[in-house]
Image (cartoon, rainbow, N blue to C red; front, side, top):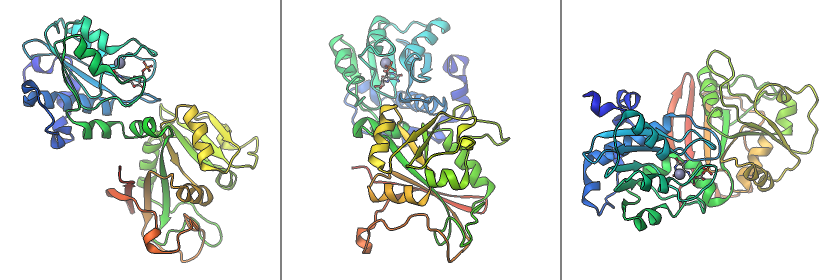
Length: 375
Ligand code: AOF
Ligand code: ZN
């Protein structure tokens, strides 16, 4: 590969993006001839890969942008590194300047519709217009009231816009964000770690450790990618968990999610939850809807429920579990606490269900991720 082609994007180019790329489910909704050029979709896949790997945290979506010169050379690339940082388009424009490549008459390929608003930063549409970009293609429209309207603003400025060229991949990149923007509440993942018969503790109360070290390491990786972890006061008092995200070597991960405890009982002063880690938020309520409202106000997009049975039961009962992460250990207890209790289901047909999305072995533990089907 020539150095020209990788300019601004060496890491992405080396990471074999096509293996995970969005290109597999590209839609046909591409009326403009230049969009059908396969290089546009390759570039979009690179931008997706880049955004998904940049590990930005906080309330904003992950966004990647690639810019091509008038002659179709890569001018620059950029990602959004989280609220308060420049948007991806602006980062890409700065990269093009660093690379000494003009984007006048060129093309912008973005994973999300460029914004037309002035929020924590200025509007991307204006930056693209000022740079003399002629064409913009983006994967999916921005559904938020503040972020939308960019396509229209660009068209009004005489730019050719190819909208929604791969909405499926665009949505997947920011699943929790899209969900929370459209529903007004955080995306909820329920994590369970159980025996084959769905127990989380033996009859005598012993519960550590049911799952494998590999499963626990996986769970820590997930923690480092959500905005908040939630437990009930029962679990907080019984297990005295720290609810931190740790790396393989035991050190704290860079991003620590909020630690949220719901319920009416007090936490002792010496609780590990008060120690180092993410900010502790105590919500004095047993109502899942109320707790999610508090979290929405704090701009939490994705919350991970880690127990115990009463909290899990309350969320399932309320129909507020969007995704399940089930770690299942092939062992049987036959008695002891169940992971979820009575959720008001008397007959099979009424059981809440999720669609299996991912299955893998983590050491001795089986891991299943399942999601509500999107309407
Ligand atoms: C873009 N490019 O890279 C991102 C966009 O107030 P701010 O500056 O933090 O903007 C946040 C909103 O901007 C966010 O809710 C979403 O609608 C949009 N995100 N838009 O053009 C980007 N991250
Ligand atoms: Zn923007």
